[in-house]
Image 1 (cartoon, rainbow over the protein chains, first blue to last red):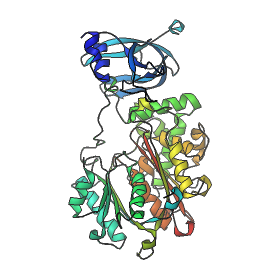
Image 2: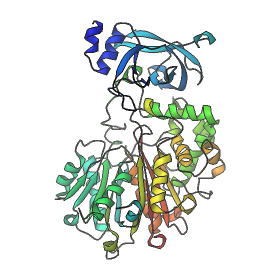
Image 3: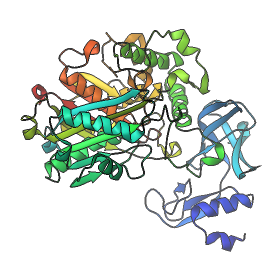
Image 4: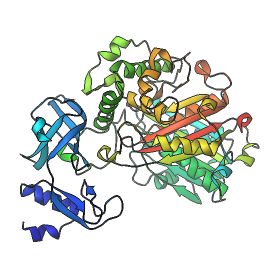
Length: 126
Length: 384
């Protein structure tokens, strides 16, 4: 899908199309500078001039839990991106992590499609 | 109409529950119907007198329609506001507004679920959130576990503190013959329970039971002519910031920090006036969060506040005197059972767990993933 094609999509479909193209994109309001995630048609203050920008991909663990399913354990985390917005994600490489730990995003392909996941990052991630 | 002009304008004149615990062989609507009929009888009214219907369930897309048909009602006003477990605290506010505006004269608020015998799982029509789905959250517990993790990290709350909440609930349940989970429970048992979603174990989770509840409200002037002891609507307020836990602004502060003061302002009361505190304890962290957000202790102190049996029978503050969602009943949406216990306490019908001189009770409903917060305050005639 080309950039022009994606620009015709609604925010959810556009986010997913970018992900499918290997890009982790979030929205920013040109007029107010507010970042928006998850993707919507308006910022919290009502700005609708939202444009897609590449996420820096760095962030901090805000909260984390480990789901202990009988089929196996996996963590579910809320990650605060350095842009100031929060997203649900997971750290596939570790059982769990400390709240406040620095993380870095990557796109992981799964059977259900691509998703943004995080790995623990060193100090250099800042 | 100003906010304080609603204080004392309506009263609960009938209250009933049905099928609390296990009710094999009954559908959700059959249980709801039993509770509704009992509540209307309790009010000294007939079903045909009900001209306002307020309902939300976990299994009916159009709850008021289903209730109206099942009970053969012909309401003039109906409201199926569904904000999860806190719907019924909001219904008390809506019903009072409708009664006061003359849109109806006798309001029925009702709920029913057979989720335990129907499969033992939480029944929910709640749709997945697309931005969460790739990470396979197991809601509601994932959301509450995330909030717990944050509370622990920020304030030093411990698993032992969560255990104190569960133990207090069981202590109250042991005084309530209607409670589903009764019997001795030790701190060791609670702490060694199976981990489900760190840091929450099975002991931190509410029950999965059947159950139905219903209440009938009329305008306060009419309440005096009915046979029962009226329990007055004193105030209520709601607040809601998010649907998905991702969008909750601060995982350690719920919108109860706004709904509580709103309800207390309308009621003209403060924390020290409340005799019984009913908090929606879907998980142990809820009790801690709501004690803080409703101002019974400072933010971050909830874990320390619940230690040493302070909210257990004989403690300083009577919290969840029926045994709560943790040990009494939790049929998917629990909000109306908070009201049932408040009514029992104010009427003086709470048996072994009855609080002396209980005149004012606070019911705090929670819906979704710490999402919709609705606080309602009820009182006796003496406290009006």
